[in-house]
Amino acid sequence: MKQLAYLVSALVLLAACSAQGSVSGGPDTDVLMADAPAPKLADYGFFEDAGADRPVDGVVPYDLINPLFSDHAIKHRFAYVPKGKAAAYSADDVFDFPVGSALIKTFAFVPDMRAPGVREYKVETRLLIRKADGWAAFPYIWNAEGTEATYAPAGGRQAISVVGTSGDALSIDYAIPNKNQCKTCHQNGDAVLPIGPKARNLNHDGPAGVNQVADWQARGMLAGVTGDVPAVPSVLDARLPVSDRARAYLDINCAHCHKASGSASNSGLWLEAGEVSDVKLGIGKHPTAAGRGSGGITFVIAPGDPDQSILTYRMQSSEAGVAMPELGRSVIDEDGAALVRAWIASMDTEAGPDKGAP
Image 1 (tube, rainbow, N blue to C red):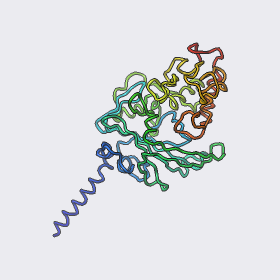
Image 2: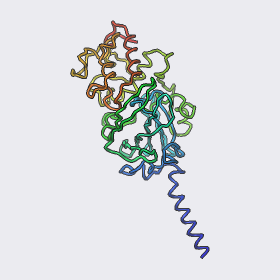
Image 3: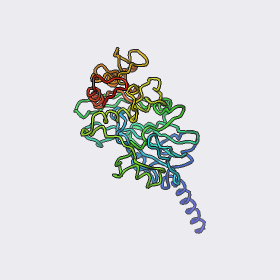
Image 4: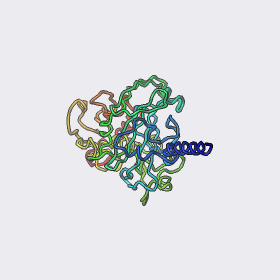
């Protein structure tokens, strides 16, 4: 009987270890590759803790040199590439991640933006999972206690009240996108692709204090790195030219839609960092379609005159149907708008389509 008891205990322990194997040994592959999304974020096994702060082995924290503005949300990013596989490097585009990879992004807020990290709370986590037939996007909403995030295909809205960096109260009508809205921003032709994991966004020291492109390569997560790795400047580094910083801002905040294969390609306004055509950048360019979104202004960018530029008009609006970006913000990014205004103001007033601008 004693031997039987020992055997039962051993089997129970083995079962427990097997159940926990996806946590200690990495995410649960079966859950990741299932046709249907998991009901809870915790089901994937990305994190050791219920609050999704401590990633398991193989889930790597990363950041972007310029995060996309999302109503002042704090973002925590993690990448997972299955062991023995690697993302294929690209100098210009998003890395080509292998099937089974996942990108995890949690959005959080603090009551007072002047005290980062103090009483921070999570609102949502968005997953991009590389399935056999392409990327799939799944939104998860956190409970008030910050202990569980539940799949929310319909998205949702939350009223967020914070104290801004100026000390003024700020009310945010925060929108958690539904599955279809996720696809709008992540559209690349007929496919859905990530936005951030590009060489130019990762080529800096990340959360671990080391260069992220080199780190991913050393970990075996990234293969094929060749030549000089491109980089964009930090929009916050005032020592750098305003034109470079403004272009970097537009690249991360606008270019995922405003590019040849993006959802706003019919605008003719393409804002990727490598774009060289003044016309495609909107300099001296008439909008492709008139309407209240233009504010009665003639040019997308009027060199030397930000007040007569549709680009800044739309950036400085929070009105539905006028505000740009259309999704992802309910308040104005005052710092971003000021940066783009300064760039336009610095332009030669004689500049026009493909005549050159800083």
